[in-house]
Image (tube, rainbow, N blue to C red; front, side, top):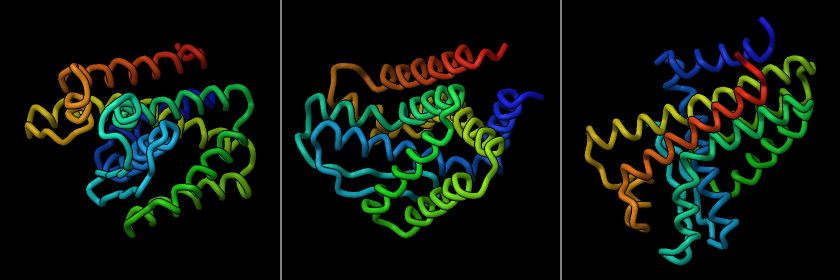
Length: 216
């Protein structure tokens, strides 16, 4: 089995096997909240803190204008961040730039340490950072490539799954606190439309990655 197929198959197992997903879902939450945080800073908002919880939920708090493009972009970034990072990682590995992808990830985790506001969140970031550091400085090149590609496919597959989970959660719980509901209050589009946007865009990122790598 070649590397792209093996990495994609490994990623699928991490997503579809419930006991594994209950653990690996924390990685998705980490990237989700990092997406909120990064876009908040890029749009001129002040990042106040990030929390990651044991139930795989998370919270990123920023301050600034309560409405407008910056707030909309910040709210929309969470569910899209894993797909974007996964697609970028696939492209980098495909072009032989695995090292750049790993160093970028390590740098992002290092910055996040300054904004983590709970012990569990700190633990998740430290474990993730330690794993990336081991890959960079201890693992041979083929192991680095396989791990980075598996991580990329994991994010690409997990992004549409979490978007679909959001749809099911909103129908079951009727909550009004999800990112889709926040976006509905900020825009003219209702929450189900925003949820559908997440599903379409994350699915599109997965399809694009398949095309880039050339998996049949």
